[in-house]
Amino acid sequence: MSSENLRREFLKRAGAGLAGTGLALQAGQGIAHAAANPPGARSFDVRTFGATGDGKTLDSPSINKAIDAASAAGGGTVMFPAGNYLCYSIHLKSDISLYLDAGATIIAAEPPAQGGGGFDMYEPNEWDPYQDFGHSHFRNSLIWGEGLGNIAILGYGRIWGKSLSRGQGAQTPGVGNKSISLKNCHNVLLRDFSILHRSEEHTSEL
Image 1 (cartoon, rainbow, N blue to C red):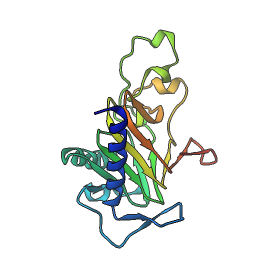
Image 2: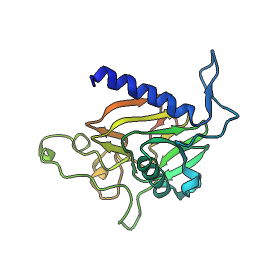
Image 3: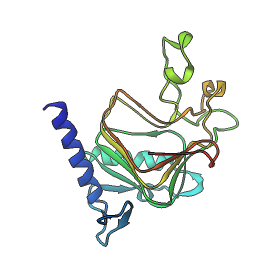
Image 4: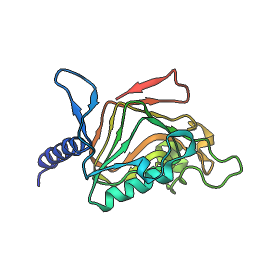
């Protein structure tokens, strides 16, 4: 299958995945509204897997369980209802869409004060002596994936890199460095959500 056909197939799948979540885009409007139909069989609500969205409980283990379940089912949409999801590293997988509902925020949690745990450990890289640390490492991120295909992050929610470090602190085990890190991935769709840096005053929108 040609790269263009692969792209078309992915976009078709992304549309089908969102249709299965019970969301409908009304003609002439730029926001998604909840439809009367319940989520389809290919959608996976993170709260079903134990996420609380209360901004206090660490929700990344439950979110990763939802992604694992969607992957085991052959792919699907992982839904984030409105809420504040405190997280360490979220492991994106092929054929998975993350849908952030309006009012949903994924928040980078503070690294453990005593060490141990926290964000994933950065991977070894032979080019460390020659370039910036952030250009050499990807796995110590809030949302990351490597060598994936047919992936998407969508919806009108937010991703807040509240505790992420840009400086030398990023080299400390357990500290996160990037909000989204995708390496050697293809058929990637990022749309509509907002990204916040350490301060909520600085916001980027996709």
